[in-house]
Amino acid sequence: MAQRALADAMEMMANSMAQEAVSRTADREAQEARRGGEDELRLEMFMNNKPSIFNGGYDSDGAQKWI
Image 1 (cartoon, rainbow, N blue to C red):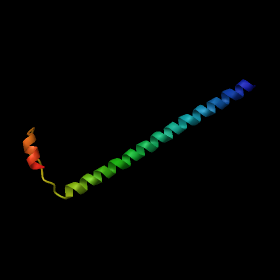
Image 2: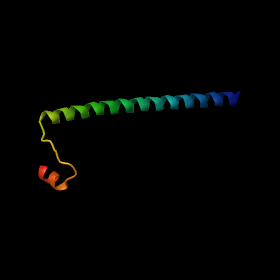
Image 3: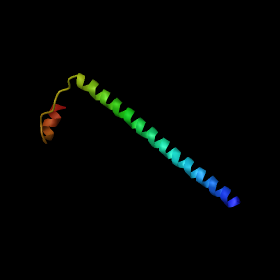
Image 4: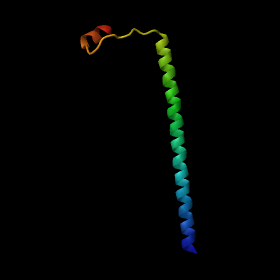
């Protein structure tokens, strides 16, 4: 009888831990999705300022002049 109660308690604990892990994963994914949306908004705002475009290639001197 005591072994069965212990087994049931352990099963409930394992289920609770699994549920918590799923919840944390969902929270993390939602946070990353919000952050991605914020990044897109920042990029859009930056592009609305019409930044100059670097047309150079692998020319470090050209890059320094552009900066």
